[in-house]
Every structure is written in C-alpha cells, then in structure tokens.
Image (cartoon, rainbow, N blue to C red; front, side, top):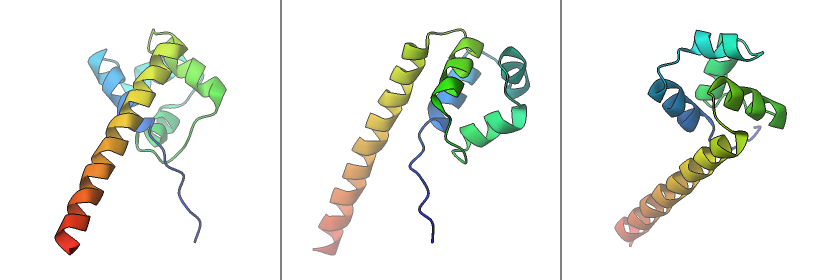
Length: 94
C-alpha cells in the first residue's frame, strides 16, 4: 500500500482564505489554479509544488514567507497534538 504524504497545507490555506472572505472560485481567479485544485489542496489530497505556494500567496494577498510561516505553525500545532494523543494512549495502555 502506498503511504500518503503528510500534508498540512489544507488547514492554513482554508483558514486564511475564509478569514479574507475569499471563495475557492475567487482564489482560483486570482492565480493560475482551478477551484478543483484548490479544493484538493484544502482537503490535503494534493501537495503543492513550490511555485504553487507563490501563486497561492499572491492570490491571498500575502508574502510567500508569511504563508509558509502559517503552514509551519499549523504543522507545529499538529505535531504537539499528536504527541499529546500518543502520550494519552501510552498512559491508557499501561
């Protein structure tokens, strides 16, 4: 079975887009991507290439570095939650 890559762009992408009151269709119009592709990214079914990060950042009217920072913060949060769940499970198993 093929392993699914750990994707984390979906949560921050959707969060930023909604915060800015931009629909997937509007974001697609602002950058050379389709609404369907943006949906796949938001649902972590696709992982973007570096150039796509720049397109998305431009469409969201932010610097690519700011967008990447949001993604990093999301990854850190997910990692922390994973550790809490793992610790809880280990405690329950003991």
